[in-house]
Length: 479
Ligand code: ADP
Ligand code: ASP
Ligand code: MG
Image (tube, rainbow, N blue to C red; front, top):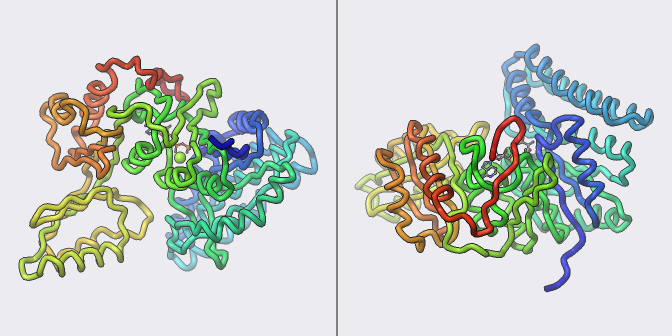
């Protein structure tokens, strides 16, 4: 096998940069990493949500609420500067920059409170300040610690379409930018520091690529620079058999294949953003999921290798699921109906999780998400013109992920026998048999997750070397 490129992309999520102690860990991790490095940073924890709320308050003329919430976020950045930047020149530079961001956001608040309107484009501008501020502060902290770093504005590298709030990159244009702007710096031995989540259109308007998409940014940088490895540093030991917030005793996987990981992310596991696998898979760049608070753990490797076929690897879920049941109007021919339906979907662009069809009806399953373009009532109205349409909300989609699930002995029976009394509205194998989903009622959620975890991970012979116990997630007992 050809030797891998020595370039590593390291991404640190919100909790990994939440305060001075966490950032000190980050600095140590970067310092101890060999090879050329690109560091991708999230906003400090909860900053993006706070900025979204600030924009919302401002657009409702609730200026006092917006300003006080802004103040809180800004102060957290000043505290970090105070703790981690003691060189006076670096400190005053950092303070000035944060003050400038503060002023800029305050101006935007005033503007929004006058126009009383909040477009997705403006919302993206608000959100972008989280990463812009965290990267500024961490850049100065790293310089103060003696690291040879260069701060890059991701908006100058990653170019996207103008689908604000969930913009998608153009890899070709972005690669040309990476070649001209990043490669010379890397050749000089500089560690590059860049923001996750944010990008811009070709004419320079700020975009974001969806909540939690800093993982995707890391994969994009990995792909643009043909990295040897992408490291996602987070607050758990790796990919687990279930969300530890739901199943506190879930186990860590030592490895998982790209395809399985993609399915797991698509069906709700927050540990890796759903778009992150594709760029890595395409260039065969392994992704490591690692714990920035527990560097002793060896994490999970996501790669093209599938060492454990015919096995369930994890159980995941998506809440706030909306189900549209569509029965075509009899007067419409089948093909006309399909054409009209696809047109409606293309216009609204909902993120569809499952599409089930029988000869005379279609079930569209999708997750509700705030601040997106998708207006379910409008979608329903349009569907009502071509069909009898019923909309049911607040369902939960639970998905078992692994490989070749249909070959596991008694697979479906085990699911239903371990869940007596649970009524699943729909069940479905994913296209490639990497997933099996059940649509259930909210009231059955915890019971079903617990039963499935027990059935597939606690009762089985787990000495395969795949599953490992984990350490504590901060404040929460995992093992
Ligand atoms: P970051 O801020 O580092 O991006 P996230 O909160 O987005 O971190 O993702 C990590 C979290 O994902 C974990 O703390 C955990 O609660 C959640 N999670 C959900 N499903 C899983 C899973 N199967 N394995 C690991 N973590 C999971
Ligand atoms: N800061 C952004 C968010 O909270 C992106 C990320 O952290 O991945 O959604
Ligand atoms: Mg995340």
